[in-house]
Length: 243
Image (tube, rainbow, N blue to C red; front, top):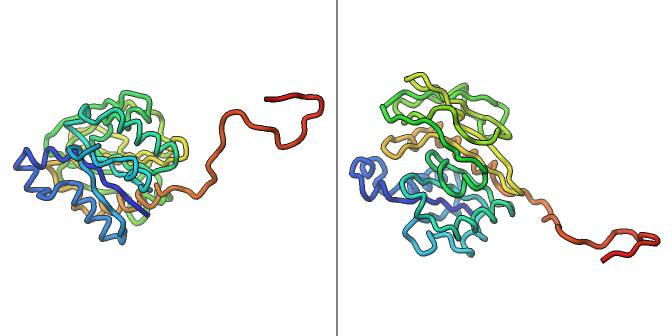
């Protein structure tokens, strides 16, 4: 399996507090997670690379794409957005992390604003497992508890998920749909909320396990590509002409 991890990589370069948490960038930490789980064909890409590191050649060779963005959503070129969306529809898996909910790619695939409430106040977060039978939730237990995280609160303006996997409770009282799956075209999508840049969330073993599970789940299925448009009949149609 070929995996590409995309990160805008701005906070880590401009904010010393974030650089202390992720000195080599969030994308590098995510790559280390997948390496620890035995994924060997992992590459990274960042916003300021040519074509944002997502050339057609790279995307064509990618089975699952992980996406982390926050402060520079508008800087992602629309041509690249269209390119990624097409690959998802054609079968590439997509894992959207934390503030990637407002990325052009996720909003395009959801068809909604993907707006929500938020607050950064060092709050405890408890992510309750809603569907323990789902493979993304394997070996997680009843909940994941994070000592400090950014709060995201309802209403979250997304379509009803195909599967709701996690619901978060925050110390300030809000709740949030933090783990949602979708299918768009032939591609599988998993949105997973935790991962604010100033907190060491991606070092938490349960968060790492969910991400690794998500990558495995989002792997493209070996199904026949469907044919669309005008087609000839499989059988003779008596007395009918067709184009």
